[in-house]
Length: 486
Image 1 (cartoon, rainbow, N blue to C red):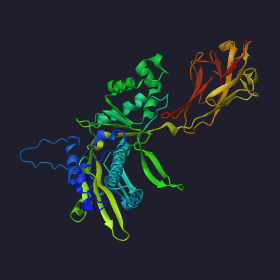
Image 2: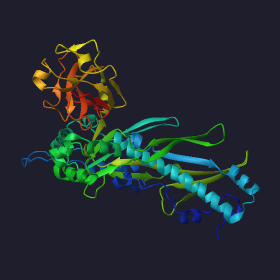
Image 3: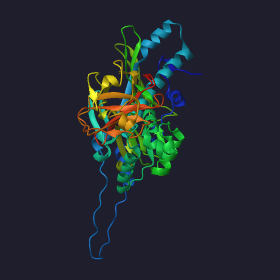
Image 4: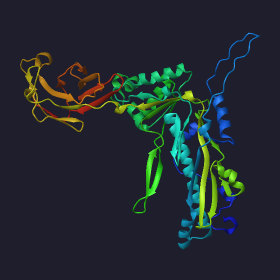
């Protein structure tokens, strides 16, 4: 039968906490597969041991028998900050217990409420450790800016390895971008084995023309690549055998609104706009979630401090304030993630927003193109909105600069503006095209063009603006057009 310590309401005996497993109530977090949790009595010494064990092998040199051996070094670690990873949270137990007592709750049922509060507190401590692990994967560092702490744990990941950008637009050459990262890592003696990102970014890759044609051939362009096919391609082409997505969220902060209801500010554990390439050890790990002894352990000779049997890294402490009379329950843990090898991370920011999308509209009725009035090509009802072009396109025949080259037919006349100032390329056209495909027109100061429509139901108007590294694509549907006939 469950009991309170010496029949004191609210105080739970240590053996009860030991028997009570702190089950984390959330979906499996993939970060725990890369950073498994371990306990140590000395955070700094353990960190130093890990850092020296997993560094890239450094060559010793041949020596003459009468020469002095060269002196090597130990990998430096951030001793100043790694000891400060104290995570703790407490709750006023008395307020809840008084309310429960007034509601008629007694003995075993009250005991369960106290235990559940302890479990929730421990869960909050564990949540903060997962945030730290994911931040390490996303930035190469762990920052702590809360409760008068302002520090950054620097793992020594080279700055050039955290400054990559990836253009995941449909027209971007994603395979070449990935290969460049793979090649750089190889030069550094690192074999990349995995990707850590969001499902959104994988979907963008599956929608990419270069990946579609690389996986399914030219006939596969435009067809969304299957997830399994993408992962098989990564494995065969780049040696990337592990593809991990993390779209889980957590409560970053909580408050009570004016109606007395909880208001929780949710955030993602791993940023949506990051793609991290990584290399693991033979066991499939990036590092360790290293736990130490919080100050409450030393206080155990004076206060009641307990650990969970299932998760022995989080400690529970209870004490009573005499005036005002308040029973507190607190969860505490000393934690810091450890990265085995600082060279093992290559972090890219998705560059989708680096280029502004252009504005596309109908050319004015008072204009002429190739000496043909626009009013002879289309009515004044051509509209570009909601990803589509609608309106009436006339039939053009006879002898003129347009039909003499392209023959009689329906010709749409469009113009484009609001070109990103960083751009050095503008490609426009219909896909599939009547002949030329997308045409480079950056040097065309008129910023307009005509396009022959042969099948409005399958053709799309496309404009691609690029700065040579990043690009943005606008695709417009034509199926809503009205095409006049001869």
